[in-house]
Amino acid sequence: MSDSRRRSKGSQEETAGTSNGLGGRNRSERACDMGDEDDTGAGPSAISDEDDDPTRRREIRSKYRDLINQVQQNREDMLNPANNKLTDVLEEANKLFANVRQAREAALDAQLLVLATDLGKEKASQLHAEGSAFDPSAFAEHLLSFMGLNRLEDESGQDGNLEGYLPQSAWQRLAKRSEYCFKTAPSFHYILGSFLAEPPPPRQRVERQRKAPSKEAKRMMPTQLKKMEESNQEATEREVERILGCLQKYFADDPEEPISYYEFVIDPNSFSRTVENIFHMSFLIRDGLVKMNLDKYGLPCIAPVEEGEVELGGAAVRNQCVISINQKSWREIIEAFDIKGAMIPPPEVLSQ
Amino acid sequence: MSIHFVSVSCVYYSQGSIAMSQKKKAVSASQNKTQRRSQVCLDEDDEDAHFSQITSSQVQRAREHFTPVQIDRKVAEVVQFILIKDQKKIPIRRADIGKHVIKEYKGIYTEIMNRVCRTFEQVFGLQLVEIDPKNHIYILINKLEPIHGEPVSMRPGNPKTGLLFVILSVIFMKGGVIKENLVWNTLKKLRVDPGEKHDEFGDVKKVVTDEFVRQKYLEYVKIPHTEPVEYEFRWGLRAEKEVSKLKLLEFVGELFGQDPQSWTQQFREASTAETSSQRT
Image (cartoon, rainbow over all chains, first blue to last red; front, side):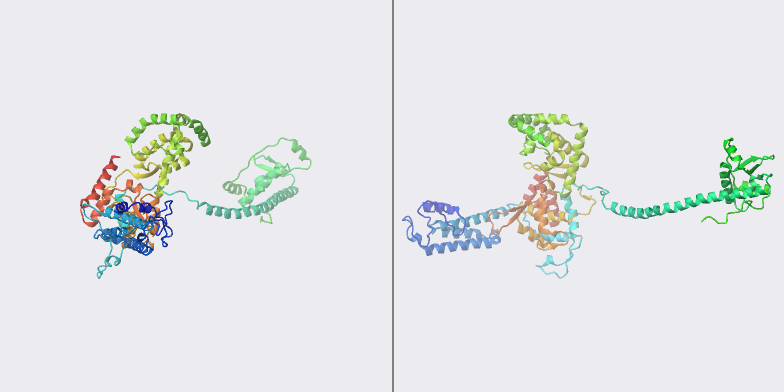
């Protein structure tokens, strides 16, 4: 409508529509209407004096700005389908436009037109030719009821939905029901979870703790073992020599009579010492310091080897045998030989 | 391998138009078949420069180059990639699939994607849907319809689903576009204030204007010529494919105690959307 008016007005306002700014100036090559010296009104002869009246123009501009503000501030009101306020504004603009002569005012008119058309478009989109309307406030009310709102008994009419207690599971309940509307793909997750990086560090710490004492223990061990080994060897040697000494003493008393092996080694008071005696005896025999032979009864006898015999013994055929004894045999022998006491006295210094 | 392809494509560039048209002819037959079979999950008219310069001879070479076992594994990798990417519900870009998974198997991209689609449908009951044919963006949706009376999932409901439902309903019932103020005002009535931190949703404004928008459930668009700037909400591309307007209308009807058909325009739109989605 403003457009047709514009055309009917003539060529002076042609270029008006381009600028949207308030009081924007349109500098164009055309000499006639684009005066930047509005208020002085000194323009070419194309503009008549009454069109150029600065006061009047100011008035028009101010009215346009009022209209623009009105539209912007009361946007919601304008959109309300119940009234025709938008149409009223447009009619006002039309009336104002009748007096517009120059571009600056026309620019304001154009700006107002843009706003009005936007509103018009929105208002049109609100129209529903058929079917019932949809009220978002009512929708909210129904949703609250669905979510389980406990309304207080003495609620007032307006603030109804700010009163009342909404339970914790309210949104959950809504979500569960809303899910049906969605074809959401379930999110992929491993059923048993994935490996976490956390367990290994504690294990390492435990291992380190365990390792530390064991290393120390190992370090201690060698020294102990060394001691034991030395003492063991020494003890064995000493013991072997002692036994040899005993044997030689017995033999010295009665050189011709061989000593019964069993009578010599067995200690009727201690099985373990018996075994030790047998053990030590075997060294003496191995080293050729003691000889063993069977007497006429078939029982083993031992006798120390003379000095001279040693070499002979070295060249002679050596026999090996394995002697074993258990507690039962030990007791049988004690009984059979009627051994009352140990021929080898037990060592005075017991092992540490 | 990628450098190789670049140099090869340079060589082919001069013959590019011939080669591409040849490829298009060769592929068009199979393309019709796949489109008929399932939802469009592959595309041939790509502006994606990464893929547009693959010639048919390159495709042939690629197919011969890889063993069936290797191709099987590549298909499985793409399936896994998409499943993991879908966890956050952010749509997946084809360029990402190409860059991170397919890589040198680019030549047989089409074949791989066909098999990927089939795997999703037959093994998982999911559908790989291209929501943006221009930018090649995919989402995964459930192929199976939820049955009323039976729970959709064993997990407790995500409250954000409820929030999203409210917003989508208001937009839909109001014709498809609404100003943001309508959303905020409605939410305020539900005790969800975008200006305050909410117990369940936290920063509501961020969830609605950022998270839901990135997931493509909503579109948050500036309204032109507004001073100060105002925004409007629309349904996003994901919502169009994933949400049943008919079921949504049914629930709204339940809440109001009204027959869904009493909203004739919305009902018509919902029915149309339902039949068109069933057709694909």
